[in-house]
Image 1 (cartoon, rainbow, N blue to C red):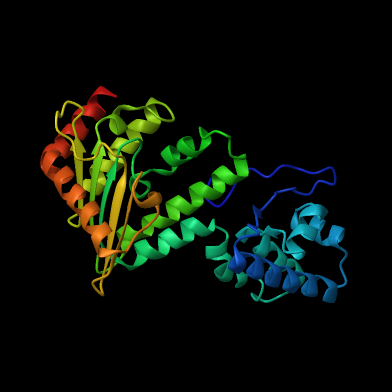
Image 2 (spheres, rainbow, N blue to C red):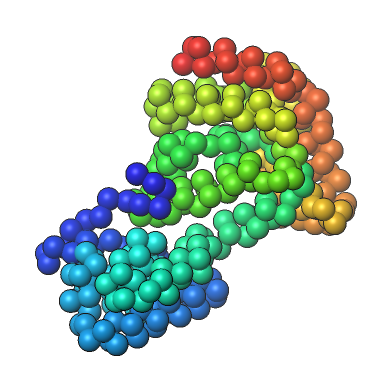
Length: 293
């Protein structure tokens, strides 16, 4: 199963009552795009002389979902648009809307983070409770989102997993950004999702750690001096010399660009890297944990 698919539940009429993605009313661009796409689908359906129920049955979805998509209350999945394009004879015009929806299908905060990561030439991060999102496998991310309380709906879990996995494109960029991660030892030993999920996660870390532009370091639990006791932090630097950082518990836990605030976060990140195992020692440590898992 791809990250953009979930098992479709069947309605009484035999159509798949797949819920699509909820439209966040506070996301202006998402609301506008969903409404525009919905109007276009409705126009093509009416031009084809099909009722909503007939159209839904033809593409394998429930009538209720068709109305929600056309009304801009659901963001349709890519396969919905592919089927709609074929049934309505749109000659690729509806399928092209997948590009327009590629970003707004993800939550606004995640889109904003992904845009920053896409611009970054350098990223430094420290993780204390779980692995950094860029390092997570799809299985690990799904387990992590699945254990949140209050619980996310299954559809929201899949939406968040898809958004997280999409951010992994940072590893394919050219020129490659410099990426540095420090992870607490406990994040390697806590079997989120089960032993096999964690084994595959550790194997993924070993692969990423061999990339020339990626450094992964482990902070041993036994350290008696630790500059990261305040929580997770991250600094992103950009090609124009600007930067943005965030430190859990400081500055309202919000992203900051003020040089005075950034200096504090960068200082802590630098000390944490010095206190952690070296990248080479860390890969050996991860191999050891993998052997024990």
